[in-house]
Length: 110
Length: 114
View 1 (tube, rainbow over the protein chains, first blue to last red):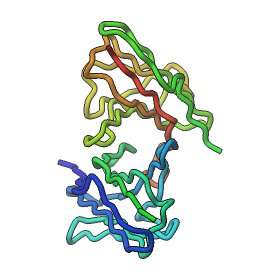
View 2 (cartoon, rainbow over the protein chains, first blue to last red; view 1 turned 135 degrees about the vertical axis):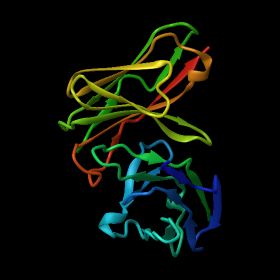
View 3 (tube, each protein chain N blue to C red; view 1 turned 180 degrees about the horizontal axis):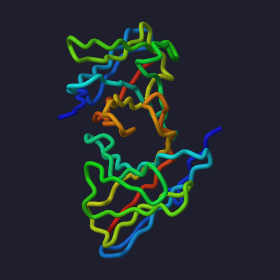
View 4 (cartoon, chains in turn purple, cyan; view 1 turned 45 degrees about the vertical axis):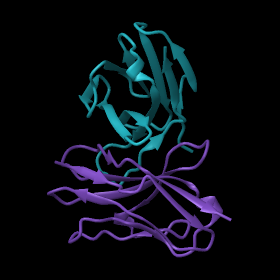
């Protein structure tokens, strides 16, 4: 069965510290992985997708098929990174549905 | 700029009432989704529609139904609201035909059932 696991409900760091938000997935096919973010009082929005191999707002995520992981990383956290982050999995044929994880709240203290 | 709008930001209903949540998108997207967002449970898909009058059950469809009579509008219906349906409801839309296309979300409707 498809599953997305985000083991941390809350991650607290100080400004300038490195950040790693963990995401593990379970999927037998070829996965498509995404990170979505929700800032306070804003709507949920796409942060990045693994297929694009992009860096957005200093965040990167590498798909590791051996470890079935797609961890989100940033070398130096900023206060404005404080938000709720969701990892999402797709990849079923003939469907555009995503499975979301339970989310990790990132708090960056000054 | 993609716009996904939801009819209400906050809604308070009584147990047993029939509740309609409306979602409208203006980007001609084929796909539309309804999710519940609950702390500790993340986003869970209630229903998905990939075309007018077409729908698929998501992970938690019990107690809900949907209607898609026009491409731009996707309605979520709670036939008889119960307290365990108190939640944040998010609507989203996307183009069909590939997960490369991101889902665009509405602002959410916070529903309280008393």
